Length: 180
Image (tube, rainbow, N blue to C red):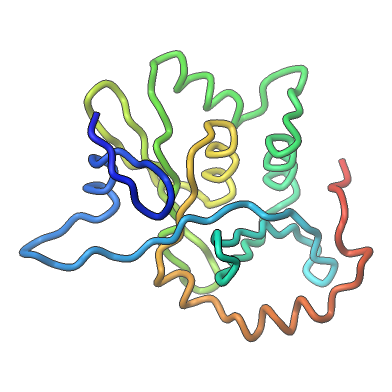
């Protein structure tokens, strides 16, 4: 398998063809590798927020998720194994049973305050792209040790000014562990 060293991580070249299909010499869309920096509770919206940041700390992408999705992400972050497999653990087990690999997750769009994502999979010699909610894609990426990327267009769409105002209004007690 050929690899490409880009954005600070090694990614199979075939993945780049899926992430960036080109026609007639069109330019590649720009993506940024993101890292999960935290999971917090938003008391104003009664929802949880997955906070993704780029390596340099210049870009931040907050994604509001439900309690169940936040719990699945939290369990993966804390390496907690449930007594019975949760949905994302089951998905990972099915992929492992067929020797399929999660190559990456890409946050592809933001439309009317809703984020969209794609999970990129490798099975035998073929690549597949599956549409997913970002929360499910991130939960699966964490269990698969797969990188998470965001398209530059998504990073540009989210309003950092509104985000900064929201962050300024947070109190220390707003940060903390998830309740069960």
